[in-house]
Image (cartoon, rainbow, N blue to C red; front, side, top):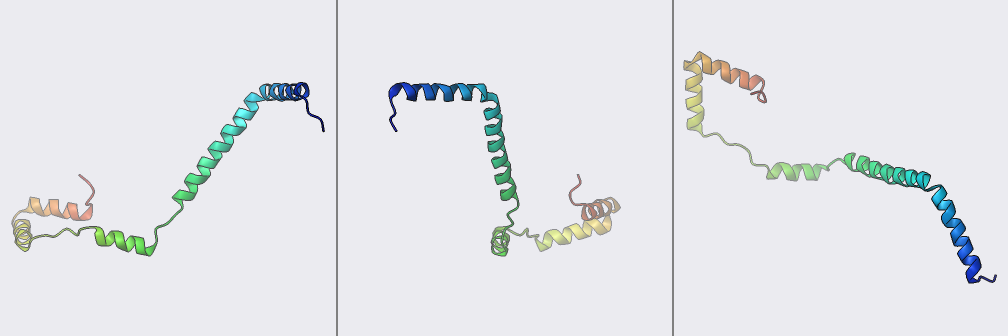
Length: 99
């Protein structure tokens, strides 16, 4: 197979003309492939569940809140003496995330 400079240039020009003619279609296909790959990777990363070991390690690291016995006694005394405080504390126990 004999390849000279003129035939190589003509074949490259023909290929470039073909690419230019279908540039929009090739761009859309390329974009769709990249977008699909990203969606596939995100969905595979979202589906990963932590192992029991990882969960237990995170629970060990989390500090547990501590309530002083004296503070607990004062809160119980206030609750028993004041009806408004009883109502507020009962509402907070029923729905701790409301404000």
